[in-house]
Image (tube, rainbow, N blue to C red):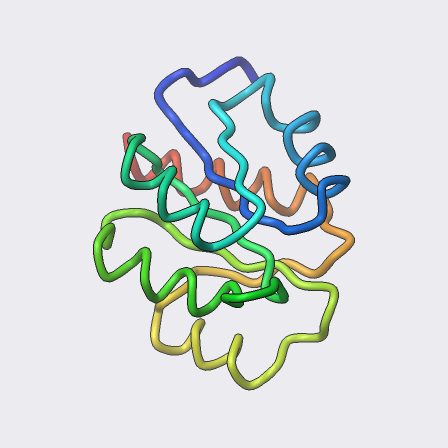
Length: 126
């Protein structure tokens, strides 16, 4: 896939190695922003036009679902996804059912699975 300069993705994860891996895999195709906390993610959303948010579930201070609830209340036009090393739990299932998030990805994440979700969303933009 060629670089799509029009699509910006925010990846939120408190583990630097996961941020590094995500950026190294996807930065050639998309504009990638990273944050290490929900608070930092909200700051990035306030300053940049983001199309897709992918957040870790388990983070200190604010988990991924709480971050997405806050973000979506202000930025409802963004597509939100969650990923976690934990199995899909009740909170994640409810977030999918209520359409707070579009999809859950298991960690370690599969780049192809995320790429397919992004590509599908981009096709809806066009």
